[in-house]
Image 1 (tube, rainbow, N blue to C red):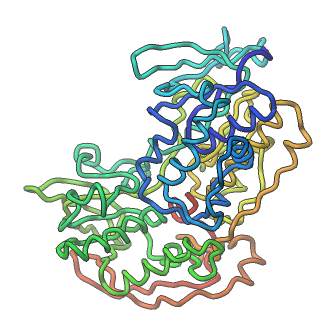
Image 2 (image 1 turned 120 degrees about the horizontal axis):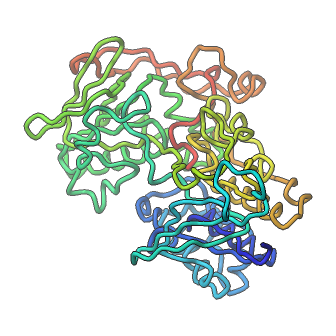
Image 3 (image 1 turned 90 degrees about the horizontal axis):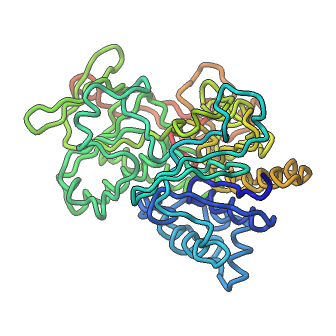
Length: 471
Protein backbone atom coordinates (compact mmCIF):
# COMPACT_ATOMS: atom_id res chain seq x y z
CA UNK A 1 0.00 0.00 0.00
CA UNK A 2 3.02 2.29 0.43
CA UNK A 3 3.14 2.91 -3.32
CA UNK A 4 -0.31 4.50 -3.30
CA UNK A 5 -0.75 8.29 -3.18
CA UNK A 6 -2.05 10.37 -0.31
CA UNK A 7 -5.41 11.81 -1.40
CA UNK A 8 -6.29 15.40 -0.61
CA UNK A 9 -9.86 16.65 -0.96
CA UNK A 10 -10.21 20.34 -1.70
CA UNK A 11 -8.04 22.78 -3.63
CA UNK A 12 -8.16 25.65 -1.17
CA UNK A 13 -5.12 27.13 0.61
CA UNK A 14 -4.93 24.34 3.20
CA UNK A 15 -5.33 21.55 0.63
CA UNK A 16 -2.54 23.05 -1.47
CA UNK A 17 -0.37 23.34 1.64
CA UNK A 18 -0.85 19.60 2.18
CA UNK A 19 0.46 19.03 -1.36
CA UNK A 20 3.55 21.11 -0.61
CA UNK A 21 4.37 19.29 2.63
CA UNK A 22 3.86 15.87 1.04
CA UNK A 23 6.12 16.74 -1.89
CA UNK A 24 8.76 18.06 0.53
CA UNK A 25 8.63 14.70 2.32
CA UNK A 26 9.03 12.73 -0.91
CA UNK A 27 5.42 11.51 -0.93
CA UNK A 28 3.03 11.30 -3.87
CA UNK A 29 -0.06 13.46 -3.38
CA UNK A 30 -3.20 13.52 -5.50
CA UNK A 31 -5.60 16.43 -5.00
CA UNK A 32 -9.25 16.46 -6.02
CA UNK A 33 -10.92 19.85 -6.53
CA UNK A 34 -14.60 19.95 -7.46
CA UNK A 35 -14.31 23.37 -9.09
CA UNK A 36 -12.77 24.28 -12.42
CA UNK A 37 -9.69 25.77 -10.75
CA UNK A 38 -8.00 25.80 -7.37
CA UNK A 39 -9.50 28.31 -4.97
CA UNK A 40 -12.85 28.08 -6.76
CA UNK A 41 -14.79 28.95 -3.61
CA UNK A 42 -12.61 32.00 -2.98
CA UNK A 43 -13.99 33.58 -6.12
CA UNK A 44 -17.26 33.99 -4.21
CA UNK A 45 -15.55 36.35 -1.76
CA UNK A 46 -12.64 37.56 -3.85
CA UNK A 47 -13.73 41.18 -3.33
CA UNK A 48 -13.28 40.94 0.44
CA UNK A 49 -10.05 42.23 1.96
CA UNK A 50 -8.73 39.84 4.58
CA UNK A 51 -7.77 41.15 8.01
CA UNK A 52 -4.78 38.81 8.20
CA UNK A 53 -1.65 40.15 6.44
CA UNK A 54 0.31 38.02 3.99
CA UNK A 55 2.58 36.66 6.74
CA UNK A 56 -0.40 34.81 8.24
CA UNK A 57 -2.00 33.72 4.96
CA UNK A 58 0.78 31.70 3.29
CA UNK A 59 2.21 28.29 4.13
CA UNK A 60 5.94 27.84 4.71
CA UNK A 61 6.42 24.71 2.57
CA UNK A 62 4.39 26.23 -0.28
CA UNK A 63 6.51 29.38 -0.12
CA UNK A 64 9.74 27.37 -0.19
CA UNK A 65 8.63 25.54 -3.33
CA UNK A 66 7.42 28.73 -4.99
CA UNK A 67 10.65 30.56 -4.25
CA UNK A 68 12.64 27.79 -5.91
CA UNK A 69 10.93 28.92 -9.12
CA UNK A 70 11.53 32.64 -8.62
CA UNK A 71 8.26 33.60 -6.93
CA UNK A 72 8.46 36.67 -4.76
CA UNK A 73 6.49 37.08 -1.56
CA UNK A 74 4.21 40.15 -1.50
CA UNK A 75 5.00 42.62 1.30
CA UNK A 76 4.29 40.66 4.48
CA UNK A 77 2.34 43.45 6.15
CA UNK A 78 0.00 44.05 3.19
CA UNK A 79 -3.59 42.84 3.45
CA UNK A 80 -4.62 40.65 0.51
CA UNK A 81 -8.12 40.35 -0.84
CA UNK A 82 -9.49 36.90 -1.50
CA UNK A 83 -8.68 37.46 -5.18
CA UNK A 84 -5.10 38.42 -4.27
CA UNK A 85 -4.66 35.24 -2.25
CA UNK A 86 -5.86 33.16 -5.17
CA UNK A 87 -4.20 35.01 -8.06
CA UNK A 88 -0.86 35.89 -6.46
CA UNK A 89 -0.29 32.76 -4.36
CA UNK A 90 -2.55 29.79 -5.03
CA UNK A 91 -2.67 29.83 -8.83
CA UNK A 92 1.12 30.26 -9.19
CA UNK A 93 1.64 27.38 -6.78
CA UNK A 94 -0.83 25.14 -8.65
CA UNK A 95 0.98 25.88 -11.91
CA UNK A 96 4.39 24.72 -10.68
CA UNK A 97 5.71 21.73 -12.67
CA UNK A 98 5.90 19.60 -9.51
CA UNK A 99 2.30 20.41 -8.63
CA UNK A 100 0.17 20.75 -11.75
CA UNK A 101 0.08 17.03 -12.55
CA UNK A 102 -1.10 16.00 -9.08
CA UNK A 103 -4.22 18.22 -9.20
CA UNK A 104 -7.45 16.94 -10.71
CA UNK A 105 -9.98 19.68 -11.43
CA UNK A 106 -13.70 19.19 -11.85
CA UNK A 107 -13.28 16.15 -9.61
CA UNK A 108 -15.79 15.84 -6.78
CA UNK A 109 -15.22 13.18 -4.12
CA UNK A 110 -18.69 11.95 -3.19
CA UNK A 111 -17.79 9.02 -0.91
CA UNK A 112 -14.84 7.38 0.84
CA UNK A 113 -14.51 3.83 2.13
CA UNK A 114 -11.93 1.02 2.38
CA UNK A 115 -11.26 -1.60 -0.26
CA UNK A 116 -13.57 -4.61 0.35
CA UNK A 117 -14.38 -3.26 3.84
CA UNK A 118 -17.52 -1.37 4.78
CA UNK A 119 -18.03 0.63 7.95
CA UNK A 120 -19.09 -2.35 10.08
CA UNK A 121 -16.16 -4.68 9.32
CA UNK A 122 -13.07 -4.82 11.55
CA UNK A 123 -10.92 -7.56 10.03
CA UNK A 124 -8.15 -6.18 7.84
CA UNK A 125 -9.54 -2.67 8.04
CA UNK A 126 -6.35 -0.77 8.80
CA UNK A 127 -4.41 -2.69 6.14
CA UNK A 128 -6.93 -1.94 3.39
CA UNK A 129 -6.37 1.13 1.19
CA UNK A 130 -8.95 3.89 1.03
CA UNK A 131 -11.26 3.97 -1.97
CA UNK A 132 -12.53 7.35 -3.14
CA UNK A 133 -15.57 7.55 -5.40
CA UNK A 134 -14.93 10.52 -7.68
CA UNK A 135 -17.43 12.14 -10.02
CA UNK A 136 -15.97 14.33 -12.80
CA UNK A 137 -17.57 17.36 -14.39
CA UNK A 138 -17.62 15.61 -17.80
CA UNK A 139 -19.85 12.86 -16.40
CA UNK A 140 -17.13 10.27 -15.84
CA UNK A 141 -16.74 8.42 -12.54
CA UNK A 142 -13.83 6.57 -10.98
CA UNK A 143 -12.82 4.62 -7.88
CA UNK A 144 -9.35 5.75 -6.82
CA UNK A 145 -7.25 4.14 -4.11
CA UNK A 146 -5.07 6.00 -1.62
CA UNK A 147 -2.99 5.04 1.40
CA UNK A 148 -4.26 8.04 3.41
CA UNK A 149 -6.85 10.78 3.02
CA UNK A 150 -6.65 14.43 4.07
CA UNK A 151 -10.07 16.08 3.86
CA UNK A 152 -9.61 19.83 3.37
CA UNK A 153 -12.97 20.36 1.66
CA UNK A 154 -14.06 23.13 4.03
CA UNK A 155 -17.60 24.18 4.87
CA UNK A 156 -18.34 26.91 2.30
CA UNK A 157 -21.09 25.01 0.48
CA UNK A 158 -22.98 24.17 3.68
CA UNK A 159 -24.12 27.55 5.06
CA UNK A 160 -26.10 27.75 8.25
CA UNK A 161 -29.78 28.61 7.77
CA UNK A 162 -31.36 31.81 9.05
CA UNK A 163 -33.76 29.96 11.36
CA UNK A 164 -33.09 30.67 15.01
CA UNK A 165 -32.92 27.01 16.09
CA UNK A 166 -30.37 25.71 13.60
CA UNK A 167 -33.09 24.66 11.16
CA UNK A 168 -34.27 26.53 8.06
CA UNK A 169 -37.01 29.04 8.75
CA UNK A 170 -40.41 28.23 7.31
CA UNK A 171 -40.32 29.48 3.72
CA UNK A 172 -36.52 29.84 3.63
CA UNK A 173 -36.10 27.23 0.91
CA UNK A 174 -39.13 28.40 -1.04
CA UNK A 175 -37.81 31.97 -1.31
CA UNK A 176 -34.14 31.05 -1.61
CA UNK A 177 -33.87 33.06 -4.84
CA UNK A 178 -34.08 36.20 -2.67
CA UNK A 179 -31.68 34.97 0.00
CA UNK A 180 -27.92 35.16 -0.59
CA UNK A 181 -25.58 33.20 1.68
CA UNK A 182 -22.06 34.30 2.52
CA UNK A 183 -20.56 37.63 1.40
CA UNK A 184 -22.07 38.82 -1.90
CA UNK A 185 -20.29 41.64 -3.73
CA UNK A 186 -22.90 44.19 -2.69
CA UNK A 187 -21.10 47.27 -4.01
CA UNK A 188 -19.73 45.50 -7.09
CA UNK A 189 -21.15 42.77 -9.28
CA UNK A 190 -24.28 42.41 -7.11
CA UNK A 191 -25.00 46.16 -7.03
CA UNK A 192 -28.12 45.96 -9.26
CA UNK A 193 -29.64 43.45 -6.86
CA UNK A 194 -29.26 45.58 -3.74
CA UNK A 195 -29.20 49.23 -4.85
CA UNK A 196 -32.15 51.20 -3.42
CA UNK A 197 -33.51 48.03 -1.80
CA UNK A 198 -34.45 47.14 1.74
CA UNK A 199 -31.81 44.58 2.70
CA UNK A 200 -31.81 42.41 5.81
CA UNK A 201 -28.40 41.11 6.92
CA UNK A 202 -28.51 38.17 9.34
CA UNK A 203 -25.43 37.35 11.41
CA UNK A 204 -23.02 38.89 13.89
CA UNK A 205 -19.59 37.85 12.63
CA UNK A 206 -17.10 39.60 10.41
CA UNK A 207 -18.78 38.39 7.22
CA UNK A 208 -21.97 40.18 8.26
CA UNK A 209 -19.99 43.29 9.18
CA UNK A 210 -18.26 43.33 5.79
CA UNK A 211 -21.61 43.09 4.02
CA UNK A 212 -23.13 45.86 6.14
CA UNK A 213 -20.21 48.19 5.51
CA UNK A 214 -20.56 47.58 1.78
CA UNK A 215 -24.26 48.47 2.05
CA UNK A 216 -23.25 51.70 3.80
CA UNK A 217 -20.98 52.45 0.85
CA UNK A 218 -23.76 51.57 -1.59
CA UNK A 219 -26.14 53.94 0.20
CA UNK A 220 -23.85 56.87 -0.61
CA UNK A 221 -24.68 56.49 -4.32
CA UNK A 222 -28.13 54.97 -3.88
CA UNK A 223 -29.67 56.81 -0.92
CA UNK A 224 -32.87 54.73 -0.81
CA UNK A 225 -30.84 51.65 0.18
CA UNK A 226 -31.84 50.49 3.67
CA UNK A 227 -29.86 48.07 5.84
CA UNK A 228 -31.54 46.06 8.61
CA UNK A 229 -29.12 44.17 10.84
CA UNK A 230 -30.78 41.17 12.48
CA UNK A 231 -29.21 39.49 15.47
CA UNK A 232 -30.51 37.09 18.10
CA UNK A 233 -28.85 38.74 21.07
CA UNK A 234 -28.05 42.27 22.18
CA UNK A 235 -24.40 41.95 23.22
CA UNK A 236 -22.64 44.42 20.94
CA UNK A 237 -19.22 43.72 22.45
CA UNK A 238 -19.37 40.41 20.62
CA UNK A 239 -19.79 42.30 17.38
CA UNK A 240 -17.59 45.34 17.85
CA UNK A 241 -14.70 43.18 19.06
CA UNK A 242 -11.38 44.36 20.47
CA UNK A 243 -11.06 47.37 18.15
CA UNK A 244 -7.77 49.08 19.11
CA UNK A 245 -6.79 46.10 21.31
CA UNK A 246 -6.94 43.64 18.41
CA UNK A 247 -3.53 42.35 17.29
CA UNK A 248 -4.79 42.42 13.70
CA UNK A 249 -5.38 46.11 13.01
CA UNK A 250 -7.77 45.53 10.08
CA UNK A 251 -9.90 43.18 12.15
CA UNK A 252 -10.13 45.75 14.93
CA UNK A 253 -11.06 48.47 12.46
CA UNK A 254 -14.10 46.49 11.32
CA UNK A 255 -15.60 46.87 14.78
CA UNK A 256 -14.81 50.58 14.91
CA UNK A 257 -16.37 51.23 11.50
CA UNK A 258 -19.52 49.21 12.13
CA UNK A 259 -20.07 50.93 15.48
CA UNK A 260 -19.84 54.32 13.76
CA UNK A 261 -22.41 53.22 11.15
CA UNK A 262 -24.80 52.03 13.87
CA UNK A 263 -24.34 55.17 15.96
CA UNK A 264 -25.09 57.37 12.94
CA UNK A 265 -28.33 55.52 12.21
CA UNK A 266 -27.18 54.34 8.77
CA UNK A 267 -27.74 50.76 9.89
CA UNK A 268 -30.90 49.82 11.77
CA UNK A 269 -30.47 47.07 14.34
CA UNK A 270 -33.33 44.60 14.77
CA UNK A 271 -32.67 42.77 18.01
CA UNK A 272 -33.27 40.47 19.66
CA UNK A 273 -34.93 38.82 16.67
CA UNK A 274 -35.14 35.05 16.17
CA UNK A 275 -36.38 34.31 12.66
CA UNK A 276 -39.13 31.72 12.32
CA UNK A 277 -40.72 32.36 8.93
CA UNK A 278 -40.19 34.01 5.54
CA UNK A 279 -43.22 34.74 3.38
CA UNK A 280 -43.95 36.79 0.28
CA UNK A 281 -46.77 39.32 0.25
CA UNK A 282 -47.17 40.97 -3.13
CA UNK A 283 -43.52 41.53 -3.98
CA UNK A 284 -42.34 42.06 -0.41
CA UNK A 285 -40.60 39.56 1.83
CA UNK A 286 -42.23 39.40 5.25
CA UNK A 287 -39.73 38.07 7.79
CA UNK A 288 -41.32 36.98 11.06
CA UNK A 289 -39.39 36.42 14.26
CA UNK A 290 -39.67 36.15 18.01
CA UNK A 291 -38.49 39.10 20.06
CA UNK A 292 -38.69 39.27 23.85
CA UNK A 293 -41.66 36.92 23.99
CA UNK A 294 -43.57 38.68 21.23
CA UNK A 295 -43.78 38.06 17.49
CA UNK A 296 -42.75 40.78 15.05
CA UNK A 297 -42.48 41.11 11.25
CA UNK A 298 -39.94 43.08 9.21
CA UNK A 299 -40.58 43.85 5.53
CA UNK A 300 -37.61 43.74 3.15
CA UNK A 301 -36.71 43.11 -0.49
CA UNK A 302 -33.64 40.93 -0.04
CA UNK A 303 -31.97 38.85 2.68
CA UNK A 304 -28.25 38.22 3.08
CA UNK A 305 -27.44 35.34 5.43
CA UNK A 306 -23.93 35.71 6.86
CA UNK A 307 -24.53 33.08 9.50
CA UNK A 308 -21.47 30.87 9.17
CA UNK A 309 -21.35 27.30 7.92
CA UNK A 310 -21.23 23.69 9.05
CA UNK A 311 -19.40 20.60 7.74
CA UNK A 312 -20.91 18.14 5.25
CA UNK A 313 -20.32 14.56 6.37
CA UNK A 314 -22.06 12.77 3.49
CA UNK A 315 -18.80 11.79 1.77
CA UNK A 316 -17.36 10.25 4.98
CA UNK A 317 -20.42 8.26 6.00
CA UNK A 318 -18.58 4.93 5.51
CA UNK A 319 -15.68 5.98 7.74
CA UNK A 320 -15.43 5.66 11.50
CA UNK A 321 -15.36 9.08 13.12
CA UNK A 322 -15.37 10.38 16.68
CA UNK A 323 -16.84 13.88 16.70
CA UNK A 324 -17.53 16.46 19.35
CA UNK A 325 -21.31 16.32 19.91
CA UNK A 326 -21.65 20.10 19.83
CA UNK A 327 -19.08 21.47 17.40
CA UNK A 328 -18.72 18.40 15.11
CA UNK A 329 -14.94 18.72 15.23
CA UNK A 330 -12.82 15.82 16.41
CA UNK A 331 -13.75 15.03 20.00
CA UNK A 332 -10.33 15.89 21.43
CA UNK A 333 -10.15 19.17 19.52
CA UNK A 334 -13.61 20.36 20.59
CA UNK A 335 -12.77 21.81 24.03
CA UNK A 336 -9.64 23.45 22.58
CA UNK A 337 -11.58 25.52 20.03
CA UNK A 338 -14.93 25.95 21.76
CA UNK A 339 -16.03 29.53 20.89
CA UNK A 340 -17.76 29.79 24.27
CA UNK A 341 -14.29 29.66 25.83
CA UNK A 342 -11.75 30.67 23.17
CA UNK A 343 -11.35 33.63 20.88
CA UNK A 344 -9.51 33.34 17.57
CA UNK A 345 -6.16 34.09 19.19
CA UNK A 346 -6.42 31.85 22.27
CA UNK A 347 -6.82 28.49 20.52
CA UNK A 348 -3.91 26.32 21.73
CA UNK A 349 -1.53 24.63 19.27
CA UNK A 350 -2.83 21.34 17.91
CA UNK A 351 -1.91 18.91 15.18
CA UNK A 352 -1.96 15.25 14.19
CA UNK A 353 -2.77 13.88 17.64
CA UNK A 354 -5.81 16.11 18.13
CA UNK A 355 -7.04 15.55 14.55
CA UNK A 356 -6.66 11.75 14.67
CA UNK A 357 -9.81 9.71 14.02
CA UNK A 358 -10.66 6.07 14.78
CA UNK A 359 -10.30 5.62 11.00
CA UNK A 360 -6.51 5.30 10.79
CA UNK A 361 -4.78 7.69 8.37
CA UNK A 362 -7.90 9.77 7.73
CA UNK A 363 -7.75 13.41 8.80
CA UNK A 364 -10.04 16.41 8.48
CA UNK A 365 -8.02 19.64 8.36
CA UNK A 366 -8.67 23.32 7.79
CA UNK A 367 -12.07 24.87 8.35
CA UNK A 368 -13.77 21.47 8.27
CA UNK A 369 -11.67 20.29 11.21
CA UNK A 370 -13.30 23.00 13.34
CA UNK A 371 -16.80 21.74 12.58
CA UNK A 372 -19.18 24.57 13.47
CA UNK A 373 -16.64 26.59 15.45
CA UNK A 374 -15.79 29.92 13.79
CA UNK A 375 -12.40 30.44 15.43
CA UNK A 376 -10.28 29.32 12.45
CA UNK A 377 -7.31 31.11 10.91
CA UNK A 378 -5.33 29.96 7.86
CA UNK A 379 -2.17 29.78 9.96
CA UNK A 380 -3.90 27.10 12.04
CA UNK A 381 -4.67 24.99 8.98
CA UNK A 382 -1.11 25.24 7.70
CA UNK A 383 0.31 23.98 10.99
CA UNK A 384 -2.30 21.21 11.03
CA UNK A 385 -1.19 19.79 7.68
CA UNK A 386 2.49 20.11 8.55
CA UNK A 387 1.91 17.98 11.64
CA UNK A 388 -0.39 15.50 9.88
CA UNK A 389 2.03 14.93 7.01
CA UNK A 390 4.88 14.42 9.48
CA UNK A 391 2.80 11.75 11.19
CA UNK A 392 1.93 10.04 7.90
CA UNK A 393 5.63 9.62 7.07
CA UNK A 394 6.46 8.40 10.60
CA UNK A 395 8.28 11.51 11.83
CA UNK A 396 6.45 11.55 15.15
CA UNK A 397 8.81 14.00 16.80
CA UNK A 398 7.96 16.62 14.15
CA UNK A 399 4.27 15.70 14.32
CA UNK A 400 4.20 16.36 18.05
CA UNK A 401 6.23 19.57 17.84
CA UNK A 402 3.25 21.79 17.07
CA UNK A 403 3.82 25.52 17.23
CA UNK A 404 1.20 28.16 16.61
CA UNK A 405 1.50 31.92 16.97
CA UNK A 406 -1.92 33.49 16.50
CA UNK A 407 -2.81 37.19 16.71
CA UNK A 408 -5.08 37.92 19.67
CA UNK A 409 -8.48 39.49 19.08
CA UNK A 410 -8.20 41.79 22.07
CA UNK A 411 -11.71 40.90 23.26
CA UNK A 412 -13.63 38.25 25.09
CA UNK A 413 -17.29 38.20 24.13
CA UNK A 414 -20.29 35.96 23.72
CA UNK A 415 -24.06 35.88 23.95
CA UNK A 416 -23.79 34.34 27.43
CA UNK A 417 -23.49 37.65 29.27
CA UNK A 418 -23.68 37.37 33.03
CA UNK A 419 -23.89 33.57 33.12
CA UNK A 420 -20.53 33.15 34.83
CA UNK A 421 -18.64 31.50 31.95
CA UNK A 422 -14.89 31.93 31.85
CA UNK A 423 -13.46 34.53 29.48
CA UNK A 424 -10.44 33.10 27.67
CA UNK A 425 -9.64 31.56 31.05
CA UNK A 426 -10.33 33.43 34.26
CA UNK A 427 -6.92 35.17 34.65
CA UNK A 428 -7.14 36.65 31.17
CA UNK A 429 -10.64 37.85 31.85
CA UNK A 430 -9.59 39.62 35.03
CA UNK A 431 -6.71 41.43 33.34
CA UNK A 432 -8.44 42.28 30.08
CA UNK A 433 -8.77 45.99 29.37
CA UNK A 434 -12.24 47.46 29.58
CA UNK A 435 -13.86 48.32 26.28
CA UNK A 436 -15.83 51.36 25.27
CA UNK A 437 -19.22 51.44 26.98
CA UNK A 438 -22.00 51.36 24.43
CA UNK A 439 -24.77 52.50 26.74
CA UNK A 440 -28.26 52.63 25.38
CA UNK A 441 -28.98 52.61 21.65
CA UNK A 442 -32.29 52.52 19.78
CA UNK A 443 -33.20 49.00 18.69
CA UNK A 444 -36.18 48.10 16.50
CA UNK A 445 -38.58 45.68 18.19
CA UNK A 446 -42.29 45.01 18.43
CA UNK A 447 -43.98 46.14 15.27
CA UNK A 448 -41.19 48.45 14.15
CA UNK A 449 -41.28 50.63 17.27
CA UNK A 450 -37.97 51.76 18.70
CA UNK A 451 -37.12 51.33 22.34
CA UNK A 452 -33.92 51.80 24.30
CA UNK A 453 -32.14 48.59 25.26
CA UNK A 454 -29.16 48.52 27.57
CA UNK A 455 -26.24 47.08 25.63
CA UNK A 456 -23.39 46.02 27.86
CA UNK A 457 -19.75 46.02 26.84
CA UNK A 458 -17.35 45.10 29.61
CA UNK A 459 -14.25 43.01 30.11
CA UNK A 460 -16.13 40.55 32.29
CA UNK A 461 -18.20 39.13 29.42
CA UNK A 462 -17.36 35.62 28.32
CA UNK A 463 -15.32 34.50 25.36
CA UNK A 464 -16.11 33.67 21.78
CA UNK A 465 -15.95 34.97 18.27
CA UNK A 466 -18.86 35.81 16.00
CA UNK A 467 -20.24 33.36 13.47
CA UNK A 468 -17.08 33.60 11.39
CA UNK A 469 -14.78 35.98 13.21
CA UNK A 470 -11.54 34.30 12.26
CA UNK A 471 -12.17 33.38 8.65
